[in-house]
Length: 575
Image (cartoon, rainbow, N blue to C red):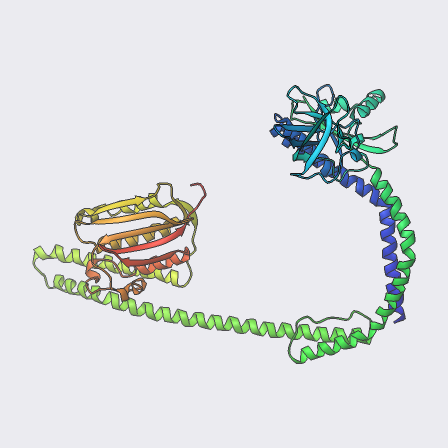
């Protein structure tokens, strides 16, 4: 307990001492660096905004006022000859009885105390001043809220509603006086030979300190070209360094007052904290209780060299070892279960594959055998060519069936990876349609492509999507009635969703079969048997490809026949 009390007290006092030392040595430097860095970034942003609104004097004036209030700095726009531009950053706009009067707040001849407080939009304000233009719209204010019933001789009184204003806010002491020091700074620098002109004309920024000889206040002055390359104007900003010095002096006095209080609190809290040495017993008891429940999460460790620390380390090591062992057993069990499930699934797929192949190959093999026996028996010469042609056709059909089965098996065992690219669906549909020119001509079918735009792009695997379109078009042509139209529609159905519909005119599919047609070897009607072509696996392959693309798909009966559809995400990328 004594060691804990001593170490805690010394540590807190050491941290407190380091904080006081760091603030005394580095606070002023940090404050200056942060303030000048923010001012430098603000000047760069001001220069970019100035180029956009340079022609609008009112917007430039407001931009100056906002910058000066935000950074507590005086800012001037200088000409090529380093003369101040006549822009008043602070102003008040009044809506008088029949005109709008602007009251620029001069930097010289007025202090912030003379500006009445509580000015707000929509409020009423009375001002005595002198009009500076022929249209009597710009007034030099002399007296705000005058108490005399009549204005002084030579002055004009205006009363109106405040419609806009920009006044000094969050500025240091006497900001209007500071805003009038630009000429004094440049005159002093010219007398000392400060090379600010050469640096600015070379496109570089310039920064230097300047001390006001009248008030003795230290200022940091920063200058930079206002436009790129031209050098026709310059931006000059000046901010006072007086507040940081005052803040450091106050902090030092504050530490002297607060140090005894901190010392008493440190001793008191350290004494209380040292009495909490008995808490490791409670921690160890809770740890043992969790271990008894096989709960190995969140085990605290007491890092002391006494008996408590040694016991805590042993319990923590036991907890980690048991947790690791149980976790490894769980992972091993999960892997075994996954492997078992995968083996069972593979076995089922193997059995299903063998059964399907046996069933689908039985008939063509019987046909081939029958024709081959006929050839062996020496059929008439005029039948030999027809028999050989039928044997070749049945062989091609069996080969197509085997290739489709192998393709389907790759999908079912997750052995297919997509290679998505940005592709044009209308172009791909036209390319796929061209492959069926002969079949369309034989059945006297017309294929129409309807699309919202020829520039419809999706991100998908080019070869697999071509396979989808070929299978769906082949299916539509195979079951379409002669002298009919097959329609391919590609349109935006939802934002960033592209829907493709392939519709033919032909027999409908029973409602109970619409979901099962995607299964391998399933035939919706007896009329849709192997004599009509196909292997019975095309739609199953289409299903797997579209599922890999995350697409919505299905089939519906229409007035004319059957429509197959699928939806893909639209791609905004280039081709």
